[in-house]
Amino acid sequence: MSKSILVSAGCVLFAACGPAKEPSVAPIEPVVAPTAQNEELAADKPAPEPSAEEKKKAEEKQKLEADREKMLADHKAELARWTPELTAEARALAEKSYPTGKAAILAALAGKHRRPESAARDRHRHPLETLEFMGFAPTMTVLEYGPGEGWYTELLAPALAKRGKLVITNGDPKGPPDLRATFYAERVQLFLDKSPELFGKVERVTVDGKNPKLPQEGTLDLALVIRGMHGMQNNGTLDAWLAELRRALKPKGVLGVVQHRAAPDADPAVSSKQGYLPEKWLIERIEAAGFKLQKKSEINANPKDTRDHPDGVWSLPPTLRGGDKDREKFVAIGESDRMTLRFGKKE
Image (cartoon, rainbow, N blue to C red; front, side, top):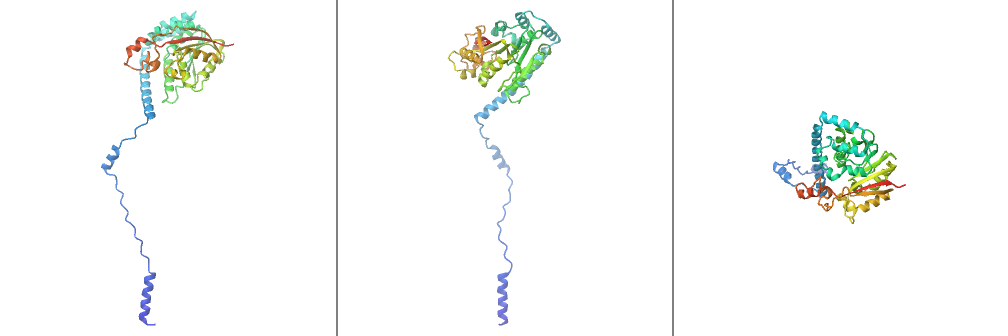
């Protein structure tokens, strides 16, 4: 084989077996930071419209915050009203022994410890007549369901301080702060804490609004549910509460009810949302729970109340939820038309 042929073959082999070429790689595009213009466009993009439920929750939260702020401001003003002279008068009122329920309530009604706006409502609420109708005596053990802003508590606490006992139900003031029930419980606690002289002996029972339980069993002389049974109906706990109240009352104990009265043909599932309940229906429900109607009264009746207000019973005084809209009209009507009922336990 000639030398020239060998050289040619070696060149061919080298070309076939030589190092492989590097594969071609596409160039990497550089990451470009968003420009100020891009950021502005993103910022200008409208946020999603909140749902109706989200709007409602936001409004409720805002209203609760405003109510809590007002509550604290009102409490501060109320504490400033309690001078040493007023404290001494309250102590004397609570330490006095009253011969009758009427004497005790009359003394409490005249006391300067009452908030000025409380006394202004006496003509609408008829406290002396209502408590006499229920058989109130200063030696009783009395339960007040849901005292609200303490309107009746201002009367019952001093009347019972010396010879009787007042028990009130309340929610948990240390519950979640975003719950309306916690706000109501805080309000009751502030009210009671302002005067140990008057309210120091009041027994506070914290209850679960969804599963009510009372520690008392056969020890109450009188249980008062004043303007509160529509709330029980709305919460689905009316029967549970009636069972607890019956168990807590003595054999001859009395259940006293004052309730905003709906039209006779009203649907309680609907009217309760407006704060009202039909009288016949409510009596039947209470009697079905083991009570017997002893008597009823028109002490708290108001024929001017048409029961068809835009904000339900809360359109009327003292709430006047509509503000200035039709204010004079609702003030002229006065507080609601109410049934006043007295029940004993069935034997």
